[in-house]
Length: 185
Length: 185
DNA sequence: CTTTGATATATCATTTTGATATATTATAAC
DNA sequence: GTTATAATATATCAAAATGATATATCAAAG
Image 1 (cartoon, helix red, strand yellow):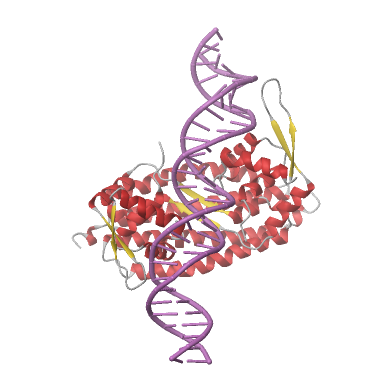
Image 2: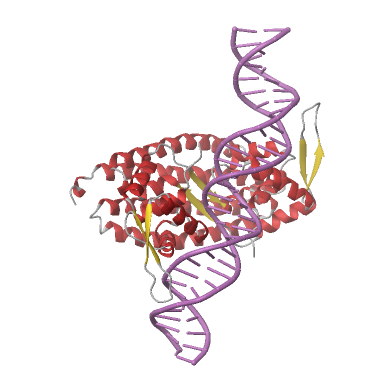
């Protein structure tokens, strides 16, 4: 039993809020859900054609002048398809952290490198965390609809897990630096 | 500039500790690093051939009777390649949490489903957390080498972020259940 | 002695990623 | 005003990763 194509669900989910072009969809993904899900033009555009073919969405040509512009709209069928997927048991949750991979294998390099890699990770997380926090605060002050609550909760997930990451970074750096106990062993 | 093939690095990292077969490599990935990195036979076996071709690893046929068995060993070249990758700036860290995706789009379903999905996530995390904790404790009592410290730190990352997840699950469920404020809006 | 589960290699379709190509329009700089 | 740059917009493709399946051996349980 093959898994559903998740990019299709991302598209349906976004179109369930508002009509969008493929380009808009990419922007929404990057600005709102990129910390837990990604999408690329390489899978968005083919997916749009597939979804239209299955009549989960409708397209309307909105080209102005020489600039092509195709706006997509979700159908009743598409809404049902989205609902079914959300209600489905089973969800695949994966972390793919190259930083942890490098740390796990750090014996292959040296302690300085290991600490440096954690610092790079820390910087990245701090930047992303400050964006997520702003996002989170804006949503918190505007909890006037069910969907805003869901947006808020996902952003909160990001904030709380990133805060845990930063605490871990401190511990990890300290432990690697306090390495005398391992000298020569 | 193309990114390195990460499965190659996983294989080199594991072989840097001990000689292994492709099947062993899959087992090591599943048991030790699967919470932050995955691998499948579909990319392990072709990668082994590629790595041998680039003389980063060597194979020795260890077949017994009719049972084929190819054991791989890392070369000096392979160790250098691994070290270079670890020292490289830049690491890609990605979360891919279908549970958050479903929550983000939960307006498309209903609150009961949203809460149920969080409970499913919670159960999964609790199970994985208990395994990670055991793993972590074992490593903590055996911090006698540099590599054990790195193994411990990666496991600790898992424990601390999973604990943060569970706290979030509580908040999220409560918030969705205390939904009267949104009724009819 | 037979079934089940673990060991072991291998392949392949589907999905996703990352990079690039192409062209238009808006905006900022000079 | 014109020129450079950034944003908008669609599209394709190679490479990588995932998920499923095929095939076969061997060990252990019943």
